[in-house]
Image 1 (cartoon, rainbow, N blue to C red):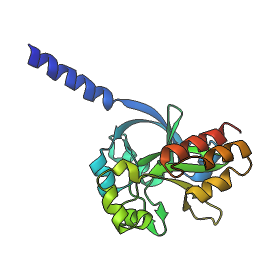
Image 2: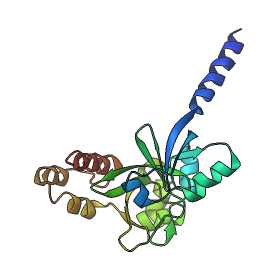
Image 3: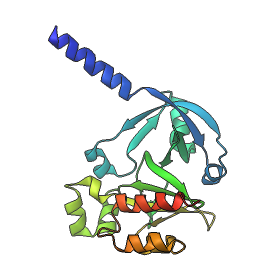
Amino acid sequence: MKTLFFVLCLFLSVEGALSQETGKLYTTLSDLLNETSSSTLNVIKEKRNKNQLFMSGGGDFKIYNGDKELDKEIKKKTFAIEIDDTLYINCIGLKFKKRPIGAWFAPGLICKGKVYFTAIPTGSNAAMAFGVVGAAVQSANAASSRVFYEVDDSEKKLKLDRVDSKKMEELLQRYPELLERYQKEAFKEHIEIVGKYLQAIKQQE
């Protein structure tokens, strides 16, 4: 009886974790910024584990429908998906310094007309971002190799800029109090710190 109860609980937990949610699809960056959704679709959001993230980089979540044609649309023709007011950016096709970010969807936000998202650099991209020795260290703790990117389309082609401390200080120039607080932070490029100040800027809108 106890075994049956355990199996039932496990089934229900897995079923709940993979339950469908309503997602708004955005085909392009422009559509996202203009809040022009191309369609609404039932999707499944599945969190990837740390090993998957470090080995292949990319976003934290697999987002799919289960239908072959719809999944193709999500994977190949969708720039972003919004689920319950949370934004997820499609990493496929995005590159940092000519190296691909990876696959699947990464948590993101819109701040001052720009899109930001956080993901783990893939493979040798990790070595580029942190150095060869640094990449080896990061392999033991994939979460700490995560970085924020800014999506720039000023050249009519999507380009990624890493949000390092210099970039963050540029973004905070119009907010002296926030800038002063940021400059006192010990770990200026940690994703929690960067995310905190991006959210603070967003609240100024």
